[in-house]
Image (cartoon, rainbow, N blue to C red):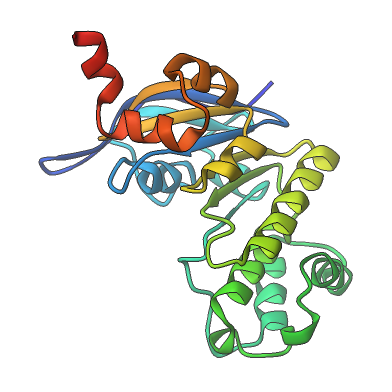
Length: 247
């Protein structure tokens, strides 16, 4: 069963075509990577999936719900994390998590916050105002907020940005365990190619709002004759494969 189904999705801002007729699926229990340079359409795609933006055309279904007609039923069962989206700064981490737990109608709120505090090592700053956290601490709190309702669909935008290598590895392990235990579907936008190779079953390569290639990380490495996804990313971003084929 597909947790996310996107068909012919397009988003235009006046003369700018931010997302250009893309179609893809994310199966339940799978992690799909969304890769592309700045301006490729990754953030716009996530905004469309969350219902924050209205498509110019095309359809989105999440957990069987049409996001144009029944998005609130889907939103209750999904969540989102980005270190670039600030939580309310003046209230504590615990108060932020209580607020989001209330919005998602989470039962046994204090128990759930205690679980996330242990899993993400938030105890040292759980009662500190969110505005006083370091960048790495804010990233961990953003992930706690994203997991508060035990989502069935998780949208992640650079989930380990600002984390040191050890903590980033630890968070990736947490995401792997959560997916294995819950069957959650994950759509991951990341510039960390090691992260993508480790976590993703499939990768969608975006360029100028279009999906220009897709496949599993091993398939993409073979197709481009490369040893790592960084080189594949550069080939696509710089049009090197297309140029070689044309020659």
